[in-house]
Length: 215
Length: 215
DNA sequence: GTTTAAGTAGGTAGTTTCCCGTAGGGATAT
DNA sequence: ATATCCCTACGGGAAACTACCTACTTAAAC
Image (cartoon, rainbow over all chains, first blue to last red; front, side, top):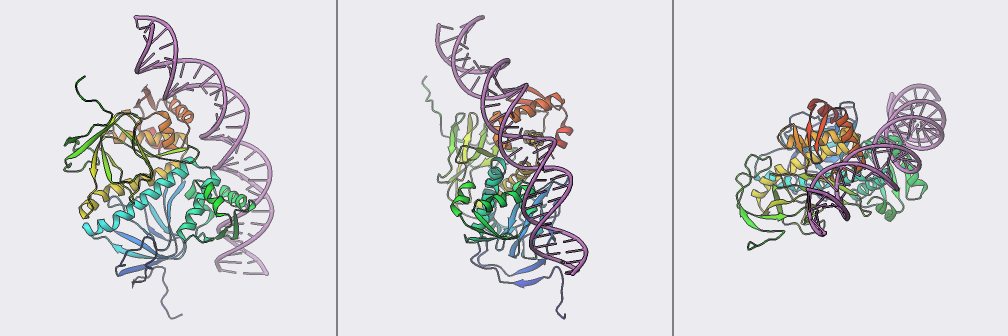
């Protein structure tokens, strides 16, 4: 091979799809970094000084307890923006789930940045608070249903939904073990609510039933 | 009585304590509303158009499932600010826990508002995501410990902590039933970690033990 | 094709909920 | 001041749900 290969290549891009939900408009000229599956984008405690927009791939944001228990607070799919913090320090870990490209935007202090960031922060706040309801008050099947409905909506509401993350990631997002996640998938399949096309993609057969279970 | 009495009186105030964590500086001249215990400040679905700063008292922000299950996402104590939303609609309910006074700030669109609101939104986002870890991955005693540590910090780190909310509110905040909350308080008392001064105030005897349990 | 990781399935155990009853503190009435 | 009511909190036992441990199966990687 003659082309240079690296796990993290920077270049310039204007290629953010304008129709994606969190996309900046117009997208500023920005450097893009590539991360292979499992690569760390930033770590808890690191200095924060940039924020990121997913070009393709998927990212998990999480926190750990001392004994290794992990809680994923959010997944970020293509077009979504993450990395902004309340102070100069990252309070969470960010990792690429699969091969992922992120646009890196240096933070410029000023009113203009606030105006762009505030709606993203408020949206994230609402999402986090809705997730609190799921973790605090819903049982396993309700959690998985809510997760699938959310993933479907974020992928345009199609019947077929891609799940870029593992069962363990899903479990750590929903506050469940991998076994429980797996069992619930099987239960939903047996009920005819979903079909398991392969490990990382499902088809929603009964959208209304799933919707009702998740709320 | 000659003085007018009402459950909701408006007046002007400059009285926000400047040392409180979220206080605006300088606090703008603002109308203040009073709410008795249990009064609704706003409801899910209502048009959002103002935000609020607690002068005294305490506020719970929550969401309901169709069958009545409730998840309190945050408590707001004196000096803290709440009520901002990602769009023009309130996504949550806000109620006064006790007799409460809140300063009402009309939203002015513009860069200036963004600059004031962004740090509050980011702080709230971080808090919500930390709460996700508690709800998703911690057991009952860890949840209560984390809650008490948080409440103590927000009240200046004193040994004695006031709990303005009922056991049911605490349960709905921590994703537990009232019985479990009550049992955990008893367990912490029996271990000598806390003392129950009365129903709504505790003394932290072993701060380090509580801290360790909550993380 | 072989190896290795990820996912699924079964059984048991532990934690928390659910349902019940009891106790205590504050407000109102007497 | 005392009594009564009501709401909140506390405690015990059974039940439910999910975690934990193990084994088996399937899919992916080399």
